Image 1 (cartoon, helix red, strand yellow):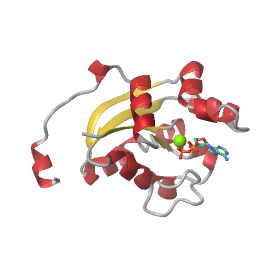
Image 2: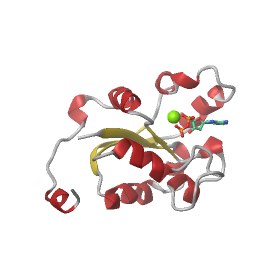
Image 3: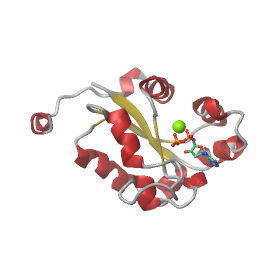
Length: 148
Ligand code: DAT
Ligand code: MG
């Protein structure tokens, strides 16, 4: 089953949005297979966001993402990578539609509440970067028969 890496950023944690955001993915029907509250080191932040190394906002991005604890998660389900991106909304909360996480909870692109992998390749890379294999829990859910 497909998996993606989602992370509630420091602003989302400080604003008490962990429960609210987790609830959206649970209600959708996706399955949580790993989660932890953690601090991101500067090194991990730079590796995670390596694709943006040359962008003008890179330093600000690393400083923001390391500014407080984040809530890192792995979610599983059919099409979860693409659907989670849709549920998050556009990168800039000003362009994100109401009903999406960034549309409902954010205002500025520099504090956009949540991260989600944007492709199968980045999902695989980011899951491995943040979680050890033994931290991911494989378990059946009987309710899946009512979702799929
Ligand atoms: P996403 O998080 O939607 O995958 P991205 O990968 O293009 O977006 O950028 C990563 C993060 O960098 C994004 O969540 C917020 C920040 N960012 C992107 N564009 C920015 C900009 N123009 N100014 C400031 N921060 C920006
Ligand atoms: Mg991205």
